Length: 219
Length: 219
DNA sequence: AGCTGTCGTTGCTCTGGCGCAATGATCGTA
DNA sequence: TACGATCATTGCGCCAGAGCAACGACAGCT
Image (cartoon, rainbow over all chains, first blue to last red; front, side):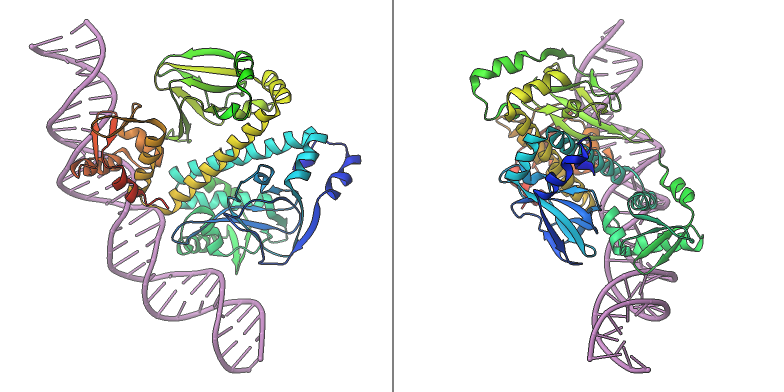
């Protein structure tokens, strides 16, 4: 639990209970880009997709958010807008806090504030790195890196390989690494033929992680 | 002064004096990407260029940092690395604080912590927006937006127009909006012929800001 | 003044990847 | 089980922009 790192387990219930537990149905929107940020959210179960739209209505995926991850931290400050839209991929449980409650918590447990800073810095690092990637790496490499990222976040071992356990269309992959669904499809189907992955409708299983990693050229 | 917003002027000297004032010569490096972050910096006079390198050694510019702006906030947390390299464009004066001092300050003046959060959230917003831009807008538009940004940050009124008052080569512009210096040169020289700008060696003056703004297509 | 090195410009070529169109595969629903 | 809707695949043409090469302009140094 990123937010509670370093805090004695005894206090966890108090902290979590001070928020409101809600459940969002699959494909429902939790908050919209541009709305005034009222609450920040911790995902307990399920998954969110965080996206932004440009003026022409093209969607890009900022990231996926799974259990134990926090989002909309910006809600702790006043008069801020949500910088992106969050949509539930499946039935998703979250705990949310409004500004006052979260600030009180941070005052009582300063580690929460530190952890939040830590989360936020990691976020910056992440976007900046992906920005660098987008500037300088070709699509194939970006897709490979995206699969590696998703594998680490959502990978489930199966007898076929590591399955990325969220609904993941070619369009989603394209939106996540800024390409077209045509290109995403072409590359995935190529990798499928080479047996690096098994690709089904809205689902990818990685059978040769090391090979994908080589294409990603990490480090 | 972003960092001191909302804090009584009486306390400013104490806060600023608790840091160390240093001067960096033009073209000298203040900190390197990847080094352990020891201090965070407030620019008083002059300017910094913040860059990242990819594996192949290609440079991208994250942003320029001018007076009253803060950088390397990440240094308040332990064991963090500088996420980018900062180089002085000209002789630049900064005030810097180490982790302990800054944390003490934040404890004594909680507004500093709030302001820092605010700065950091603005940073995320910024990168995410530029990421969206890079994904979806053509080069010409990105260059126009970059010029608008630099104009707001470094614009000086002259009789010719608004001059961007930092050394700014075509290569710099290219690194800032992820294109090649060839393309940057072609576009700037086109705009020069249309008298939207006056472009000299390492210097750009915008004579028709509204036209550039139209190309940037802001809002 | 002349030399050297950096920066800027521009014609040319080449290609990564976009987007259309057509088709096939699979899902949910009645 | 049949049908519409969404998702995936692939051949094809096209073009924005990268990169090379060659040259010009200007700055700083001796």
